[in-house]
Structure formats: C-alpha cells, structure tokens
Length: 227
Image 1: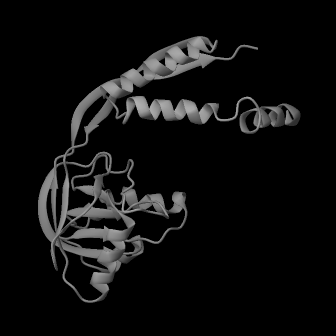
Image 2: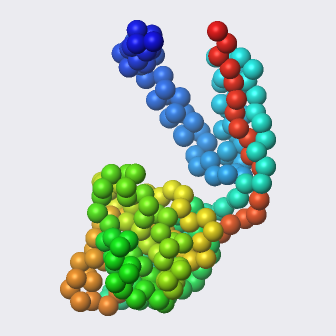
Image 3: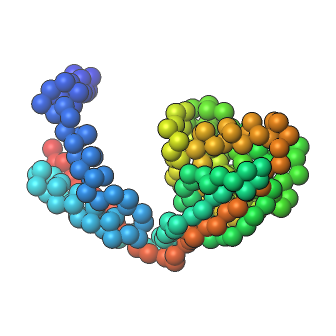
C-alpha cells in the first residue's frame, strides 16, 4: 500500500486536497465553539458533521446513542493569590472539577515524587513541573485524586504545554475528584515557584463554580467507505 499511501499524502499535503482539513476544522471550531458533553453546541456539531459526510457521498452515515455519560459544566471560577500580595490568576478548571470555596496555604512542587517528602494536608498543591513532552507531562493534570488522598484541599497545575502567552491550557483529568483542580499559566506557576524559593508564604483562594451536572446521553458518528 506504499504507493497508495504516498498518493493520498501528496493529495492532502501538496495537491488539490491541501488546506481542506484545516478549513473544515476551523469552521467547526468557529461556528460551534466549545463542545462539552451534553451541550447544545455538541449536538449541533454532530448534526453538522453528519450532514457534511452525507453531502460528501459517504455511505451509511448515521449516529448511535451512547447513554450514561457524565455531564460537567464550566462556571465562573476565581483563583486568587492573597499572600504575599494580591493577584487574580488566569485559570481554567480541569474537566470534572467539583465546586468549592477554600482558602489555604499553597505548596509548590515540581515532581509528583516530591509528595512523599512534604506534608500537604490542608494545603493547595501547585505543580510547576518541567515540560517533558505531552505524554509524560499530562499526568499532572490527573493529580487531584492522588493529592486528595493525602489531605490536600486543592490542586493547581502548570498548563501542559511548553509555550504560553499567559494563557491556561486545560483538558480532562479531575472526574471523581473531591477537591478543586485547575490549570494555571506557565508564567504564574513559575512565579509561585520563585516566591516559594525566596521563602515567601503563599496563600491562595479558590472560589469554584464549575460542577458535575448529572448523566446524559450523546451520539457516536458512523459511516462507511465502500469498495
């Protein structure tokens, strides 16, 4: 299949198909925005993709219901440092994050293995981990379950990306957590680490409105390419 594979790649990258996938994706993102599970945006996006597949001539285009899926709603969340000075952080709740209102001292760590050497009970754990590639770094976004077991009352995670313009980057990782879990920007996580290294006491307030919202059904999209 090498010849066919190369022909397909040439079509997509250099031929008449160049740019089609990017245009399709940009239209999906521009016109439907976020597509959280259980949202009207997701239902409209599914219908849009189904209609597009039919118009493009694919065979047996249809959807199948997927029941009993957890819905989560993003709220107006506040993450604010109140010591050693006041600064509101640019933060995004990690999918599954529960609501909370907690103020606590923060401890900044750079590695999950440091948890065994520090008492985090009653504290907000901030992970300012080093970038090790996405697959090796993404585990920090799932750290809420681990730190809640040893008494932490919240977790802030340095966004899982090597570059930033003071923008947080988030995703899944907090489903089932009992404590709030949010992503903060690279710049803010590194600042907190510097403050801690200078011996400063850091206190952070979390006022989280994001919350799980029951069980919903969604749909998978299926189609065929008949030979």
